[in-house]
Image (cartoon, rainbow over all chains, first blue to last red):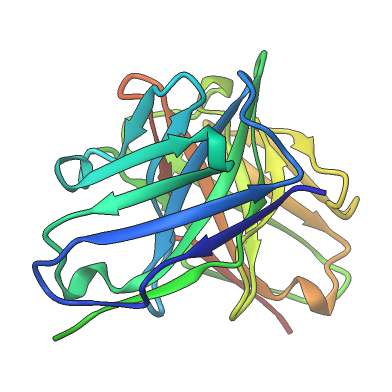
Length: 121
Length: 111
């Protein structure tokens, strides 16, 4: 059974850098899969942040691209999110998710439970 | 930047049928946008329901279906149950820029 689990600091200071990890169990980083991050500010909607492929290729939300990096660590079966220059607007629940691309099918299927990040001094 | 629009809220009676829609500011939705639909209840992560317009996951109840309708992506719930009360999000692939964009979400009330 595929499981994703986010982990991170919980509280980050303004202007600081956020680093989150998504551990993956029950799956491997094969060519048909992308691994991504989504966030949700309190009481608001979902925002797609970015994704990474096994090859290292990445795609990012244009609104966040200058501050975001997604990396893959296949040896540890995990991928990570780094976000710089944080402000209160980055306070949110952060989710990791798996995307499978196979032919004409693009399928978000497995999600983590999320980790809450608060930006505050 | 592309904006994806959904109905902010809809109300349906138990047993009824409701259709939620999703459209980008750039024009009509086609299959190239690979619409995905998610259900989210308070305190829970999004639960995938539909991918690439019409395809269901093994866990998707049969009453949920996806389609393209009048240039929009659509999610139809037939025979609505009380437990379908939730917020529903669509997600579109913006191929030109190779990124994904969520709609603002539709809060479905079953009353």
